[in-house]
Length: 284
Image (cartoon, rainbow, N blue to C red; front, side):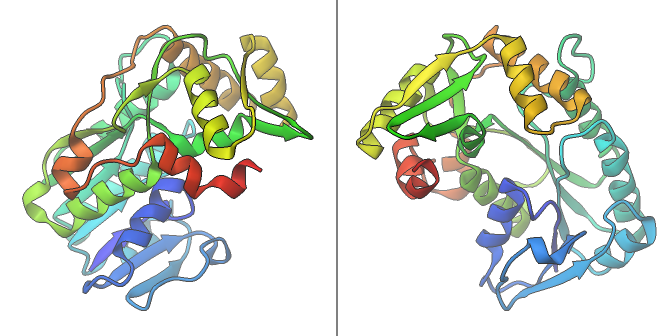
């Protein structure tokens, strides 16, 4: 039995999609099953509070390996610590933990990276823990893209540096492979796509796929703050996101592409063009 958490987020969805139909029993723990959508016949859905100790213990009973993910928030360390304690109490031997590139509990200028570093520390003492540290998800581009009539724009405070992106489906494929194969456990994987791109290059490639002009517009941090406020983001998350974007734009945590996807799954990561084509309707 495998357990998947975070299945309503991009990577968790991809993990569940990879495991669906495989000759293995899968259990998914969600707080609201209506957000999950249809699942494969081999997937058992458990609805409950993923921060409740008794719910966690019941969901983890009989589990051989678990995918641990949670939304980015100030309490994520506490949430992961509760999950790990429950997993230890029922004897789950393997955990695949979703973290992120640049995770560092001592990072001074980006609280998200501190949160991720502390999250990784919660798995100390687990028999076999695997840390997945993906770079920036291609799917997050939807948050910065807008189309008004003939004008299509990607707007953000990302400046001119190169960013290493990865498709969430490839991160999910890596996670699923590690869950299924104990021989891959106990390592840390920096999961990336095959290349690094500036946001200007992202806009140019998206233009070619859509056959419509897309422009990248660099905005100030304060302009980005206003847009995030308008979208309803919590103040602490707005500042955390701005710090993270600044750290990346300042080249503090950008990494070169790795071979993790190919090494673990046997296939190359999806290109940006393939991502854009697959999600073409989202960019209309």
